[in-house]
Image (tube, rainbow, N blue to C red; front, side, top):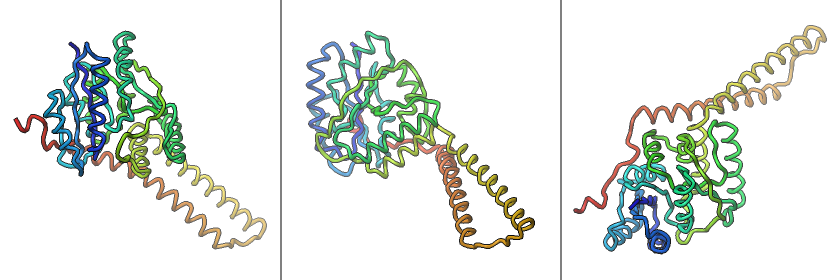
Length: 313
């Protein structure tokens, strides 16, 4: 029988885990009598009793496997660890909060089998339950990154997708430290079909994604798959040089021809501050790329495992 590996990233999800497992088992027994399953829970340095809950699930169900990190390495590292550990013919990435509906999984599986797709992804057509400001910036991010990058980023796309073993191998071959999974999945290519659904709110717990974390994650995506910000800073620098040259000519003409003495230190201060601000902005863009390069060349591990289900054997 074919096997589906379900990779679940967990950070402080002790309340949601029993509900997730119960719903997954319901879907498996109802819709997947012809397919084997394994659940790979990745504990990303949780501070609550998430690991204890996973171990309890493991005691009653040997399909449950787990990886526990030595500290919090982030969701990207957790997903990568799950992909590396997965043994199934197909792998799906899911959140433990049930915002990724397990009920879609059979449709995703049938689409791959019958329509010969390599990947079936999900995208939200609504953002019900999210703050309006956050939804606005999310949509703006997809518009910006699609203009800046050569790869296609689908608005509303989730990490929840079912992928074949070939796609899994392609993704885990990219061992870059600074990871942005949506971009990596688009980069490796393969035939992809998108299934749309309305946003589902969390069943328990609170979101771990603050506005600031999402903003940093957006910068990660832009710097990982586009060099447009570097080009933009260069163009701005050239434009300022051109404007400065024109203004110098204007000042010389006004002084020599019209006899108008140069004056006005407040305007000069404003110009200096504006140019200095643009310089710092451009240096900040360059600094972002340098910091990513610095982290890559250090070759640090993407994650460190503290224990797995095999540790206690």
